[in-house]
Image 1 (spheres, chains in turn brown, red, purple, yellow):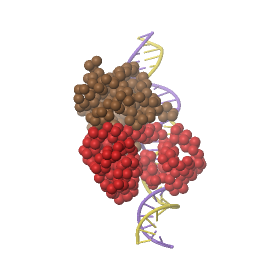
Image 2: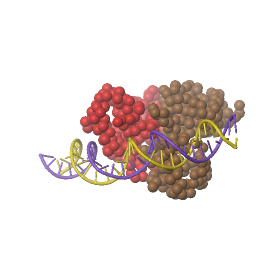
Image 3: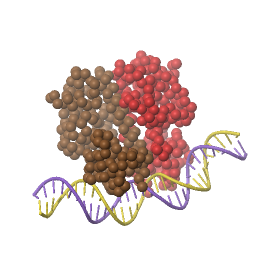
Image 4: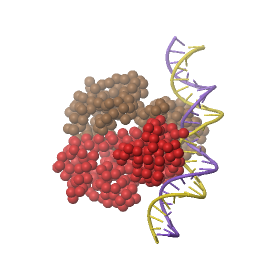
Length: 228
Length: 228
DNA sequence: ATTTTTTTTTGACTTAAGTCAAGGCATTGG
DNA sequence: CCAATGCCTTGACTTAAGTCAAAAAAAAAT
């Protein structure tokens, strides 16, 4: 299966590895296929390995006692997830579910730890991946505790323009309900704020298509955080 | 200097390393001494290495545009900090300041990456440290977005009883103002909630000494999050 | 001990965002 | 084409927590 080797070679985690190292990685990877909306693991489950998204989309989330859900990340092709318990032992700290029909690569814990031990550049790549995650979490905590919802939405939309390499418009790849959960709020509040931003000509939202009309206004909002 | 070698040997990061490996680590460590309240680095500063607290206490924090501060972590002896940019390149994602007169060990980036490359168990230890951090962040984000302030305070106090190995009472090692910042709120709100918890005989707070009167009540609060 | 400074508490008020409930819109499938 | 389901929006209301200001308490300095 050449295709899987190609996916592996493209993943940031295996960036810069030599041919035979990639083959070793390929050896231990196990294909897993999931339909849309299927649970991959739940918060607290025992962990015997981690995953990389080959194709599709996965959400990582926490659920409160009352059943309210907070999405921590949404990962697409090339992204690893579920690596935390591989190195810190114990259980998964959050749950994972597919948002689309997905093809995942599963890496069994012991085999992978073995690879890392004999492969310094793989270890450094993994350290880089975890460090990037920590960086993202720092930003998320900053957003949650130091910004109000309009500021968080503005940050997210600006981040999307970069990710989608577009200048002034973005397409949400998730439902607005899920976006609310990702921003740490509820659909009603998000809806009202989008309405307000429309009225103030900051954006022009039509369904999942959002055009940014006032880029610097949005940047101010993302930074200072207030919307009148 | 035998003492430093001892500090290094005790740190989780270097747990289980062989004698000569510890000596190698010792070779590259640089002593740094700071008075109380001194800045070690600021959010956005360039990074040439990371630190381990040998003695004292350090806070890691973010500041909002309006100057409001959110404390992300408080680290004591044995804890490393500032490792993120060592592996993901770029700048520090938050600021660091001493809370007490502190003795730190500084590990220059390139030397340390060199050590890791030739030392699989050190690499795995570092992976474990970063994974634990990610786990803690997951809990913090859950607390911030899914619990109200009373629930966060209850979680924190229960966590302190474990850390201080006490059954029913804890001593805050930081001011209430700083605790408010760590919980993502402000001193006034924290003060009111402590007052309420006192009134309901959940706790008995006298200055920085807090006695937990109703352990299971506090556990409920930490889990479900409501205080009438 | 007494002044000065910092930290904590209290009170009155405002506000962002959550809850509950109903209605509208849109997409899918019979 | 129309029902049916899921998704999004709107309105009225409640509430947790923030702001501002001042007093009280505690800690530090003289």
